[in-house]
Length: 453
Image (cartoon, rainbow, N blue to C red):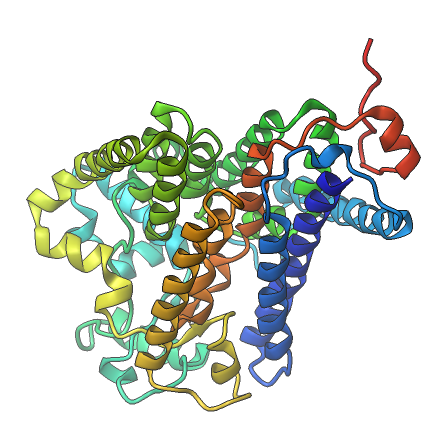
């Protein structure tokens, strides 16, 4: 039964992230809304639950029993309801039902789209991308950009309003002064837009690619799980409504998440370094998983194998980015290291949200950087100390430091349940017996495990 509680707990954490994401969006749209503390607390609680769900090795958990069957049934009833919410998001996507529908929900999607178009034309996106021409062709404006604390925003402390950004956008788009206020380079490694070339060239909305990546990742997690737990694992993945909702809502993060899931699940295989290399060559957030991946591989296959995997991943990163580095190393560095080199406004759904919403004073950015580094050190120490007793914790610990960062965007957290499910699927949970499932009143939106022939 502990196996089913683990799965349900991950799904409940994903549901908490779903509601936190909705409130986060409301507060960002209406800064006077008092929901920021609830968002910060919900994300923290979700992280704690995910860590608890991955504690231990999971050996034989499917065969354990519990006296609190009513709690178990209540959890799974809630998970099933939230799974239907995910279905609604997935089925509603083709109808484009959003009140503000556009395929380019944020600058990550928009800039990568234009970067892919430039690549098709044989040009270097890190040097040649024209932000205003790009956004004009896509029919979007300043609200889909990332503003910087310089130029006309140099004296601003808190993220500028949409009205302020529109004023500056109009000035710069008319050629009145150089653009200092908006990020214009692709701010990710080259695969973030190179992988989009076939789809952009064919005129396919890349949001469908991101949803497809999520569905493939979910299918692989279910496939890796013991056969008797697969209906519950699938229901849990759907019950973690943050996955479907915010992927359909617009997120390019699935491009790195899919290969990262593959690498984590099959890290005992020599070829796992290839998908891990693809992940780190797609988005920087995958870099945070590198030390935990290395610890896990070294624990299972030895340090020589871990260093070999690191070398292969590094080679993939180097090969895929080399053309742009050779063409203009400075432009490439300024693009990939944008979050570190550019003066960003504080923004996010983590601890800094309390300050940007006015609940507590905003501290200097160095304080948040210090907290992030301290959290990284603690998480890495925990991963190392528990590398044999809780080998899957790294799948969640990798993202924990970002909760304390100057920029702790909600997009950093909504995929945590997917990584946790990938980790749980690796655990030696054992198979769930049909009779036990029926006695527990186990629920899925599909069926309990079929009886063996």
